[in-house]
Image (cartoon, rainbow, N blue to C red; front, side, top):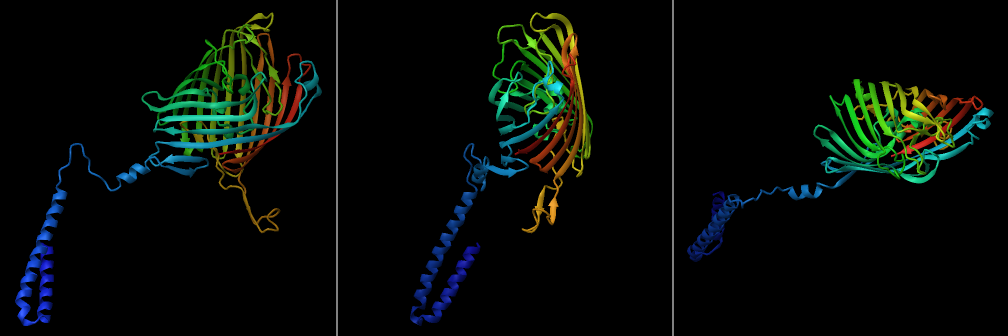
Length: 499
């Protein structure tokens, strides 16, 4: 309607101008032409109005959805990865259905030794202790999520690894598994090569350990990585976690080079967190784990066997200080109990573990029946952050998390004095730690030896990804024949970075 009014007004104005300019004899003819033009314009405007109305009321075809202006944009951006850094490198889509973390770590260790002569050279001694250095870990890692509920991890180590018997096996696969999440009732299902659900300190990442190495109990009792499958979940607002796994018991911690028929193990862990606050900086943890395991096959065709051993808490040229050697047995069980307290800058943790070997025969050649053999160990450790930080407790995973310094290490100064006296310095985070470990491998006529270790540690976290650690380890060795008993001292340090 308004368009007709506008057209009429324009025609009238044009007519007035024409009347003022044209000679009198042409006025009548001019007005007729203008009226014809006005009628034509009105018809064109009416047609445009009708076309617009018809477009609005056009019926939808069967199954046709209305188009949105940003449909193409949404579809094109749906699986575009955004790169972020949150202490690690992540690639993630906006809908979080796809996530990829590309990372790695390397830990460079150095160690210096001194020991009583009989510990090294006495009958049954450990042999020469040689100062040295090595790369404890040098790994690359890929992990992420596909289609919301499929998780994967693949981690490869490039250091020169050896198996539990000291045989060189080269580089190897560590964690390598697939996990289906968000399952009803059971929660998560994992299959591949990964850590068995056993021990609070064993399930902590090697990047987040309080000391350079885990306690004496790690070598002796903990079933670490094996090929298998596991169900796990957290309930009651993540205050309770449970894990149940079935594994090939005789696969190596590294590479998983073989898995023999019948060499199976069942491992279970149950934890609870009665108190949790301050995003994990105040927490009390309790847990227990159990594993029933088939003993190992002798590759040369001898009887099945199991052995328990331990090294001092250092891995630079460190031999075994306690060793039962091979024990003939059909199977054995391992039990662990764990407790941890995190209270701000302070944390305290302890574990007790024991192993029961059924129907043991010892020694391996021409051995005698020994009945059921029982071995045990315990450790207690604690730390304090001098700069006030907290290593948080991960509630859903029931293990320690990553430390973040309040202020990263940095220096600011002029060019002449910055090296010696910066105007301002970020301290990073500083932690002092102390641990006592005890392991007893003497029982039922099996003389594996007794070890007691005291470890003092100082850790400097330059930032969430970089740290320097110093450990002093005092080892008390009680050998079976007392001819190689005595003490050893180890000073070790590590420079570590992970991303």
